[in-house]
Image (cartoon, rainbow, N blue to C red; front, side):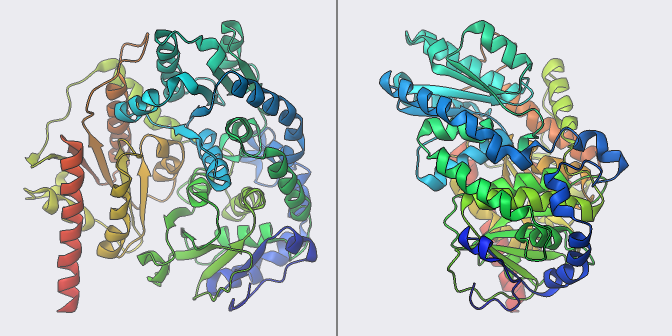
Amino acid sequence: MVGVTTTLPISDAAITSGSDFGATGAAQQALEQHLPALVADRIATRIFAKDHTLWGPDAEAESAVRLGWVEAASVSQALVPGILELRDALKADGVTRIVLCGMGGSSLAPEVIAGTAGVELTVLDSTDPDQVAAALADRLAETAIVVSSKSGSTLETDSQRRIFEHAFTEAGIDAKSRIIIVTDPGSPLDKASREAGYRAVFNADPNVGGRYSALTAFGLVPSGLAGVDIQAFLDEAEEAAEILNDDAPENIGLALGTALGGTNPLRNKIVIAEDGSGIVGFADWAEQLIAESTGKLGTGVLPVVAGPSSPEVTSGADDVLVVRLVAADADVELGENEVAIAGGLATQMMVWEFATAVAGRLLGINPFDQPDVEAAKVAARGLLDAQPEPTPAAFVDGAIEVRGGDWLGAASTAEEAVDALLRTLAGDSYLSVQAYFDRLAFVQLEGIRDQLAAVSGRPVTFGWGPRFLHSTGQFHKGGPAIGVFLQVTAAPAEDLAIPDRPFTFGELIAAQAAGDAQVLAGHGRPVLRLHLTDRAAGVAQLQGIIAALGSRSASVTDN
């Protein structure tokens, strides 16, 4: 990696795997402070030996049943023939489109794997009625679905399975022949699916948590059925595992983990910038892995998905560490307090899983549990069961209904409301934008992330609901109480019933949004809720509001 200001040497083995690493400033200081002890304590080989004592007494019970990921690349080799055989059989039946119904780790890893391979995979990780309807309307006769749920009780995936099964049947298609299940052995879904006679049921290793499951059946089944060369993917991952299982300062996983969790004072905003790596959507996968693994007990590091020229990259803020994802042969010159890392997709996934476990040890937390994720789920179910009237809007501005707390003050327009929210940001805060509607039809809304970062001068995350609830949602509640939240919901064009359920998709996603806002507000955090009564008009209005705030901020700065 030519041009890196400070480079950690790497072994010949790492070079043949196509991986590389460089660090400067606080990250380099963390390496100097922590790497010798990590090597002396044999942390790498102990992780691969599944030493569940590495994260302290309180974490031992969970760690003892969550370290299967270290051998996933080898164990999962046995899955390949069955996946390829099913792929060929589906093709013979005229199935050319695979839809993945999954959330969190069950959807993010396959999306990255398929996207990087240039293979079509429809990922349905939403309860938005419009997005579900769009997935149903596309080539149903040529479609099979993969329903992925580790617990087997995920409400979103159960709802998606129900409506697809109903749609297949209504179209005269044998639904059982088009449904493939991925779940833990013995889960409620495992038992019910075998009894129902679905096309195939794949069991994943129960000793691997969802966010570490990229190299298990959860990552491989949908990717392989869609057409990815999963054999080559696993072979690369096996090579990476051999490199990581080495107690040496050249271990790239030890280095990355140290940079993530070992800066002093802790730089707890990790800005992950795609900068030519060639891996499609990797930062979104890493975001879930890091946020859910580290955001607890009032600490953790918040991943921020950004571009190489995003405001956070050049801000120089003392709570930010920039990690650039680059090509292995890139000519990279790092600024102060930056990391650059390169490698193939399977290599990177192994490295980041390993590094997250190392960061957990340095942070003094259990990187394998998610104690605060359930709170929003419970709140959503309570709202679904009670069916309360929506909280009245504070006011309506065009296509936007505005709801917020006392901090709204005298705000009477949506622009004033957003401005009031931004004024609650402190020197160590972050802004989280959460959009609960169709992420495919309104992808342009993501553009407000960089604009808000420029206006606020603070790191900004952007998550599509409800999928972020299975990732950064843990950090929002369990990490440092420094988040400020902008929630955007939207009325669907037409609601969709969920077969044999007393609620619709529209009611479900509304309850998920309201439940999360309720929990966040209960933690004392500011939450501004903007409901778009018309999606297209509301998105355009919101984009205009953020642009106006940006112009006003630039004008003040210039003067």
